[in-house]
Image 1 (cartoon, rainbow, N blue to C red):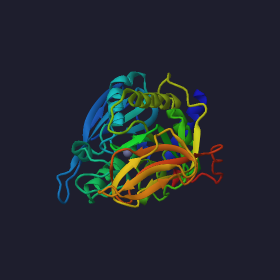
Image 2: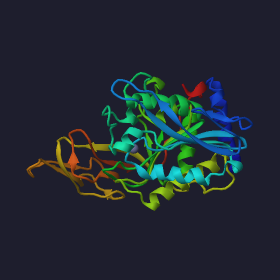
Image 3: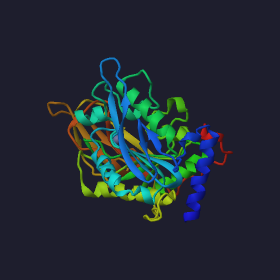
Image 4: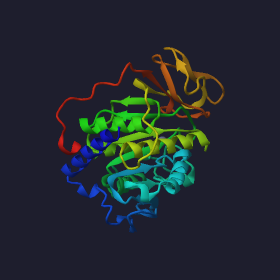
Length: 371
Ligand SMILES: [Zn+2]
């Protein structure tokens, strides 16, 4: 298994050089420079990336930690807090900062402790408090854009462009009850798609959504993890926890996932094995409310539903039924909105159908640099 992992890592290295982004590789003999902080080989150091101010705001910071190994290897970026009320990823990274020993590490781990500081401090779900935008819909960002767009721009330039592998760690937002799962994006360059599949298996969540609908244009990548994919870097979006909770199980699951990836990439000798028998989820749909009002969920995550099963009811503010939302096909409930406020067009839940097997990987020749 270790030999296969090194082959995967080596193929990524070739891709990265081909894309003219050789600086993405760690230079373990030299300090790793980020945000004005020089992290020496075999040490851990922290700092803040600065997001400049713009119209109506003074900017923000993105706190990070670099764990710089003593031997060559990948640059693995782990990102928490893209959504501000998703706490287990944030707390898992606090623990990983202390538990990953740089002296036993090949390559470099970059921890982004809080991607979306404005949303975290204001405790806003989905949207940034200054601009009403979803950070995970504005990538790759704009240098002179809204605050969310400027945050995305800094993450793209300073984190994603310097990494060889990217994991964006989420959970159900403050209003969402969720079962653990991950997304495997299959719309990138074939070698990147294949390496991303291995990343998902190594992270160990046993439900994996096969995502066929991410854009392939690096200038309009929309999502954080997809920004890495469109730049030729294997990536993963993982989900563990939700509903504003800080439960031990959700935090530990993320720690275990990172340990599996470190082993898979050959960055650390020990770690858990990849998930052996994942549940691949093919056809999937985010169910949305047609009305603004009160939401009453009728299902729970991990529940299997038949076509037509009642997922939720929506009433107006006087109690009159407006809508019954039913499963469009048989499948598994991955998350459901579990608090009463609902606005027209917002998600109510996410249902996905079991696939018999993962799709065959694309067979077209690899595109240099994944672009
Ligand atoms: Zn999220």
